[in-house]
Image (cartoon, rainbow, N blue to C red; front, side, top):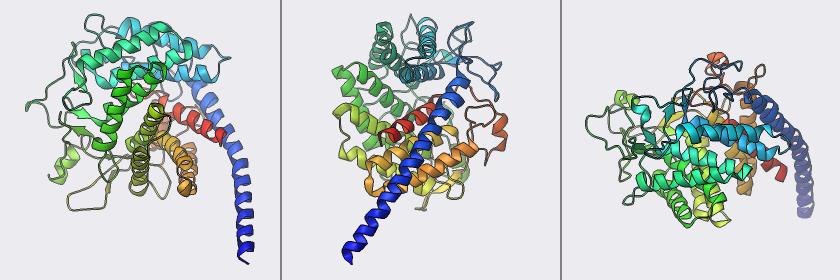
Length: 445
């Protein structure tokens, strides 16, 4: 009888696997359509600024260039990355490589500071520096420049792009890297000097703090740079950032702390009153989207460093995803909420922002499917959440009429359907990476 039960179980398991394989074939096709026809072909070549170089920043809900066309290094570099990845994915279509080179030339000619080095954070549509704080620099912005340039080099083998990526890394090494407490200073003066935070700064300002967001994207950038340039110092910094994020920035419960003093003491308002906590939400909360994104970025870095993900990184990455699922997941509609908070004396996390932005759901799709492959014992649970999130994304983030993704989930923010598809903080990077990675994972089985 025991053997019969085992046989029945095996048959049911095989039937389930066959059904899943059939469903995955349909899903692979749907992901490809969503990535190419409904995303890439909507954004490009429309977003390519043929008049002044680079890419348009503001794109309307129905994919028309808007009026506000200042250009930020982060968005410009993300467009380069997307087009470079598409060029490698569709080598028969030369337009993507051409688009990527178009963006590279704008970075090289208009956003690199020839006098002081480093990439300027914000320029005009024509590429002229804008007076005021925007003439400063950030580690975050320069990290994305490295990310875009390294990926463009991988697609094009344009040695000039790799040299500019190396130059950017050296500039960060000289000006932004902290040899005492490790990591990088985020806020930099025009000449690269780290901004020293004083008591005169508004309490709500992040200027002068170190932060998780620049740290995780430096990790991402160094991973891509190391893939194309096996330099020992890049490997050293990549390993340094992995350990810093995994062992210091990530709290024991499994979420990222957001902002820090130079010695990596967390900035926290937990011991203050609720109004003060709400006022400083940007500086101190649990960001579920960043947590699932970072789990993926840590595993990616661990893989490129050693060829096999290390056990500690696997453990922490899983804890981060599980924490986000337990505390930040909408059990009714699906999707990750924007943020929560552990109030003093309360062991249970409270959701303080139930909006669902597009990038968190994109990173969630990527990471949930990744986890289902890494952890066989929990594969079905992760896959179930992935399937739910995919249905949510199709219903509430992907525009069936105009293409592209809304900025917010339409279940909570119905006005998002008429909101801009693009601005200086929103391009096609998170969504394209998720769709591409998920399709490739499913194709590999």
